Length: 591
Image (tube, rainbow, N blue to C red):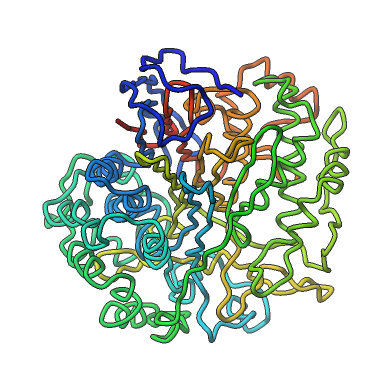
């Protein structure tokens, strides 16, 4: 097995591929500049920009959504830290410099590859509903769903945060440096200040309702009464104090004591107060399991199990495995097959996925090869009406999905000097979460990821209905790809709300089927095919592709919601190759 080298690679010879990353000799550093171009659709803000997204080669790699977070991770790796150590530092800084997307008040899913044992583990830091949550908590007195924006900004939208507790669990398993030593970069940047980036500046004055919430306005308003702009220095001493507390106390700093009391008080304020209690926070426990892994051609792709979006991405790949998409790189036929597999993937995911601690999720039935072959056979020469869900083994009667997933997520990848790898997707749900702050950080509004209507008109229950202690379904699907020998060959993931599934599927097809360098795979146009809609970055597809797809019944509509923020790393014969989505401000750097 081999991969094509990057077009402009400058590297030192390595041992024959595949080989464990721990055995790689250090290659030379490579930076590929990707030209900037404007993007007027698909971003979180009204005028998101396509930015330079360097691809890097090295033995050690961090790819994340902000250069300061990448540098924090590299600093830990230079000190001999593990991939999980660096992930803690990356998340701590992202929560400060990219608070619209993730933070310590939110949740996450993490997949970890252990280079020594070959084991791939999944960590679930998804937020949980309060014990007192009820299926009708998002319904009005007439039994109708409440307005989404009203719930979005309410205390009722916030679940017990899990990102820090999850990272602490992973650190106990795979950390090399002391937990207390991983927050220095975040603490310094919060105390001394950081430069507001163009993307953060856009979010501060965006159309999203959280941007006008009282806590958001107070945080981002300067003494002269104007909002912070790109290039301004922003300090957050409250966040620095929280970092010091987490460094000293671990997740108990958030889940017990004065910060926990402040969280409970804040979510209980205003209309639609939350039911969260101190016991809900103190009892929060992340989950660890084996990753959900399935073969894809000559590879094995590993993701977290439900309630993550991982099983859905594996369904998409399983359907595509029964096609010849690998013979049609970046052609109208290739994109057609991608679009139709996506529609089938979403149809099954929307009907059956939820928290497996509360509902039966037919994962094995959905991933059964015979079932996937039958689903793939539904792809005809031209697009037909929207496909309905299939009937996999173990499927119960479930209501059509009514969940709305919105913007506010980040993804990063870390590979350390021994080859251990972290692929982590992290979120506060919407832009700036619920718009409510405690201790210098935003609280999540993750419970809006539940279906507001718990049952269908015929009484069929929704798999993703609200329940006390339940984790809402997620689209987050961090992935790690192995070769036939069980060695890591790639790691990738993206934010994007429900579009995450399509973004990740695109990147995996680009790297594994179309054999593109990781940067080129991430930069491929986005196409989200779900139901009747083909949301796409139409200006990024060539006229020939647009015409060819239209001839097959695929007619583009505008992209809605959150654009992609893909970050990835893969192994090449010349070392690690990293990439960052040119639609955002991320970078991939290594040494």
